[in-house]
Image (cartoon, one colour):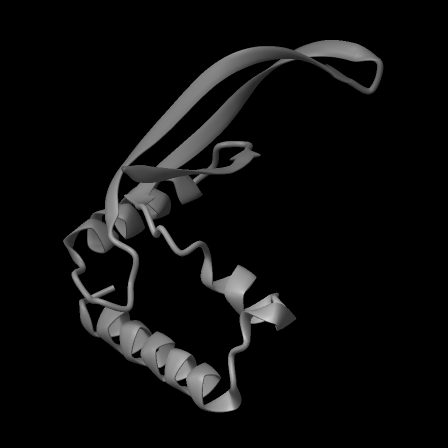
Length: 110
């Protein structure tokens, strides 16, 4: 099972190359505190859109990330849900794990 995350549609610019570079690094990264990126899809299409009362052609870009599925849900949901019962010790361990994952990510050459 996988999770698919749709990134917001953007007007393509020089960030497409930066996005693909980051995806390349994330796919190589393996750490228990970082969700595994399995793949991605990047698509561009020309659309006819109304702009200032006129119809113009524009290039629309959409990106999808295919990620490892986490059966217990997202971290932000657990942290913001007061009924989750997380005490401060547990929250600290979570923050420590995030920091360790970040250090690994930054040390991977990204």
